[in-house]
Length: 363
Image 1: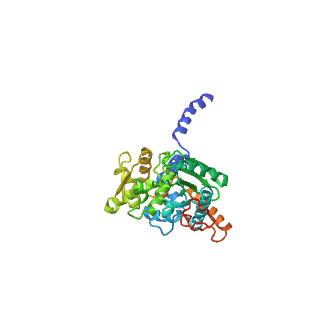
Image 2 (image 1 turned 90 degrees about the vertical axis):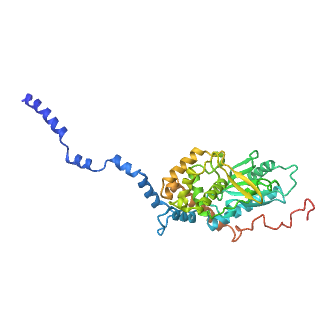
Image 3 (image 1 turned 120 degrees about the horizontal axis):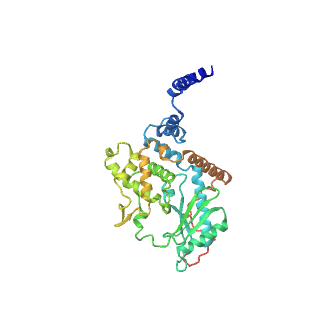
């Protein structure tokens, strides 16, 4: 009896190996967990989920990338409260500068002045001391302003860079969360930098620039001192591309925005090419030395393969969180301020205060 059982066991083993349970047979016909994970992590699935979660999307948007870029620009531009809070921040910095140099003025420039800013844009300010710079260089003024801002409080991450090519003071304003860069006018702004000062895009690039700023920020290419392009050079590069695009749009059938990374890959070499700006009979070359070209080209190649804007931006959820935080901060500041108090005239255009002493006998 035992021998018969031993003889039947191999047959039973073969039958077990040759047959499959009905449940196992159905599981083979259905997708395996690994294949489901592959579909879940596939670019198509990821893009669909991101598009649904993108806070700038509207129901009436077209399926084109350019239409989504226009929606993103409308969503990302600073609100009225945010602009009021930035103007109030500009006035606070001007007040600190006047405490050091009574005749100084402070004015806003860059994207915040031209309207090409988004809610993550830095506030670029330039202080004009309006005093003889015999004993006060921009580097020394940079250190003095840092000490005064530290004493005034409210600034986080305060750092003076007196030995940079352009001495600058950088900090983040605590109440608004806005990053501020303060530089100094030294009287040489009419030299070779004049074409750079007067740079004006030949074509409207507002929507395009806002998307490109978010794209470079997500790719870690927004800061020049970390291998990035920087806002100004990115605007110059976008203007050079738009000149080509409007000359022959048929070369870019995928649209204006989608054509930018393709043009950077095929037609512009950041190693050797430069953009020449001209103004008033002068010219200046904008080169792209210091840019991490390999990282920039990888970002361009990844953007070319993405048919939706959500694929261009690395973390949509984090961007939406920061957008809500900036709006809420600005709204609280405007509610706690007296009506109109947060919308002062620009300090550079304000008349001299009557209590300011006439130190040099000019008036």
